[in-house]
Image (cartoon, rainbow, N blue to C red; front, side):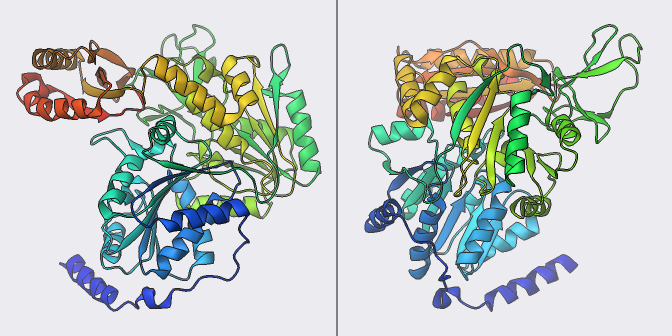
Length: 563
């Protein structure tokens, strides 16, 4: 009863809020637009109806400034703006920059908020009491009184894809919403997804490019061959010397390692047994600071074992390294240099993230260590050296999207270097310096490399030149899921004879066991999306009649990004 009364009282206060539309104020401290930026803003403002714009700008080219100018125009018209970012870690810097520019109500909406906080943001949006909402993919479903613009930043990012439960892609849903609202939508990135490039090719999107940095120049790239070289936690002597040089020049260094924890494997030195999560058939990762071993699939945590569970030996050793171990070694090599690590283990909420980012901007942290959380979209003007470590595994992935993901990751991480007047360097350590994917990317750049991959996809009829649907199923034994998918396949074959339809047998998922459930999938491929939509609309009704559906969890994933 108490909560209900409090809710009514706050709602009344919201109704009395001052109308921002009559008091739009924009800061005079606006950087001068480049000729490229001016032309892009003018071109987009010419067409105020629904148009999907793909803004492709090299890292540091000023895409955010283009967003701000377009938002300014939207605010002057008295309309609201929805700004989507791929991860919560990007909301603090975006909000800070927007608040510096606009004196209007700005909201941040993401999954870390509780239901009460979300409710009041939804209410204010619905009543037109806020001007800008910045949020992750779930913010897309916010009800606005007068929405005038949608922006999807880093449109290529896989975080926009909801892969559990009701599967959707926020970028595609945002386009659908913009079409329904009859408003423009801007999708910005330095590394456009192949799907977006394909949509440009067929005329569904309009592409505009930013090819120059207003400040600074693109960094130089160097590949360090690790074969036969002495290493300290995978740090070569040449990389250590480069770090020392850039630190001596009063600059900052970023070390990118996409593996958190201390070590990915805890092994018995006597019998070779590896600590493994029985719920996922996946090795535990050692987290020394937390004094835990953790499964990164199901997040189960256990105390670090004292003895081997197989032979009772106490000779347990760790193999490999993660960001935690890298930080330990860097502090040993550079004892007087402040180090900051940003990953899921050190950042528990946006407040902690803001504190860490403030230390970096104030140069109170000189060596930055982190995962993708650190590498995406951040602007660190004093970072002049970026090193990518231990990325060779991507060259041998069985995922047909691996080369695209690597090219995007490499380009995005590299873009953190030399973003101001200072010259930047990027070092990539590898045992395979002549790998064709790496050689082609460095020689041609991302755009030409992506077009080359598109040709390969077309040759082999892979997305976006065909359409995939995956039906996933999981249960405690795995047998019900297998039977369930086999029956679905029979239903499909019974009701369609289209020769262009490819239907796989049920196969184990890439992660065949997770949280104690065995996972299977059925892959459906066809060149017509409308055909698949028609097929699925009829199939869902027939699935309800399959007896095994009550023993399994299942879902349908259209345009999957993982198998």
